[in-house]
Image (spheres, rainbow, N blue to C red):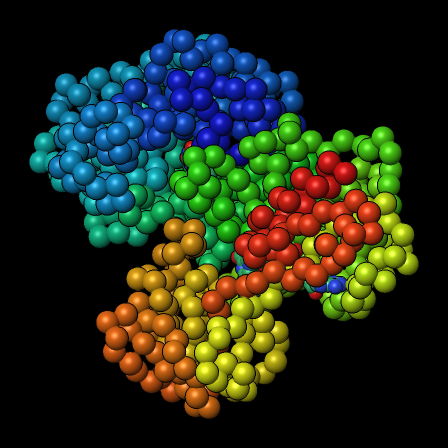
Length: 618
Ligand SMILES: Cc1cc2nc3c(=O)[nH]c(=O)nc-3n(C[C@H](O)[C@H](O)[C@H](O)COP(=O)(O)OP(=O)(O)OC[C@H]3O[C@@H](n4cnc5c(N)ncnc54)[C@H](O)[C@@H]3O)c2cc1C
Ligand SMILES: Cc1cc2nc3c(=O)[nH]c(=O)nc-3n(C[C@H](O)[C@H](O)[C@H](O)COP(=O)(O)O)c2cc1C
């Protein structure tokens, strides 16, 4: 398990019970080694208020606790030491962040404080002090974070380091800071203590690192005493290469790692979208890397290694790279996972057997219904699930149709395999009415009937030219040459991308000033890039005013009208709940709950979470 900021660290840097349980669970899941998240070596080196810290002896107590817990569960406890450099807002550290040069972080912006030689030497010593503390705390490997656009990476890269002194100028000069850190750490931990270096071997920016230059850098660092390299990618301008979204290929950094492995004589670890044990196995068998790191894969399912080891592949809850984890960190200051509602609240979400098994009827076979059925059945309840269509998955099935989101299917497969495993009595092609519920005589009813696309009340909305995302993705073979998408949210952008990739000429009409506002930032960046590549026209601050039989009339906020011709007008302006059963069931006096989109149309993440909450409390 590579470094993964848990966002379970208190503001003063201490670990809570949640932090320890988070790591205990992951260690118990069977990975060979857990590299704990980035720990700041200096107060000015933290990247956020929730960052883990190792810049003072007072942190050793908590560090020792978690190292011991990881070891007790059978995994090697390792720790990453880190300095954020310019990649931290002023407000977090109350001063201008340090950087190699005057160049600010492209994401955070704001002035930086270029380091002088005295400042450089101080940070080198801070890395040494941190390493000594890590050894004292019982860790068995230390990783120096040289990747992801943080301070060491900033020095290594011509993108961020334009110094004219001995810490800049060329590859050797830019590597000097990292070399001196490794030298200092090595001196402090002794010759035999395992030392790793994480590198963004490719940055995908002008003057940035390439695999070839990274090989030169690593050769210098091997001489200073690193024992193993973790190959990653991306920096503060290219976060899509740090946490690759589902729009990128699985195992997309393996070629870079294989080149490094061929050039360097120490073991190589590789990270990046390795979410499937079979892919991991192939990487090792083909000799492309010596160790495989699974990050988000272990957030999604901490037990992945053990399940793979024992051949229980259908029980693995695969990470779909939706980056909900990143989005929740940045927008909410806590970590969440779409597929694993327990992430970050493992104790409170524990699934315990029920004392009173009851007869539970779940209505709707979307992600919400499937998950409530799974959790309730795991607890020993007698669960039957009813779905009006012939397939399970609800809207998620539609979501997984477009070429970039096929992996969402793995979530549906997981949920279906689990309801089968726990003997949920599944009825498809049954449109449940209040009569069906009376006939079944359940103790508890859970309504998970989802939502349906909203259609705006404009002239022409009922014409055959109008359709929804469901019809675009439901497998019908449309012959659409031009399409107008009304609504530039996530669904509108995905429909636009799908159609444009099939050669359709697409215009998105959005009433806000930007498209994809609610989307996770990295995914939005990727999708916007792809829309531009496919020449999708984006009209913002425009509203649909009328539909005719060959196009849509649009009104710009300044009052200008325009007509856009299209074979199809695809309406993606949101959904409205489908829920006419809840009140009727309540009137019968039966215990009833409603979850997911049928309460308010939102996301699969909400539906799955609410399913877990109700499933564990009934
Ligand atoms: C194209 C597209 C892309 C999306 N992408 C994402 C994404 O990337 N991330 C994300 O989090 N969310 C995404 N969503 C939204 C997500 O799919 C929904 O929020 C989620 O599926 C809601 O789950 P649910 O179980 O509440 O309802 P639904 O998925 O709507 O399932 C409800 C089910 O109940 C059944 N049903 C309804 N009435 C009855 C009845 N009377 N009897 C029996 N069965 C009944 C329906 O047939 C349906 O199968 C996407 C949606 C679409 C359309
Ligand atoms: C929530 C989150 C926190 C992360 N924190 C760290 C970190 O502390 N140190 C680090 O080196 N990488 C961090 N990363 C990057 C991961 O270690 C890994 O390189 C990346 O997620 C790609 O691998 P994966 O596809 O297996 O998740 C983080 C990623 C995520 C999603």
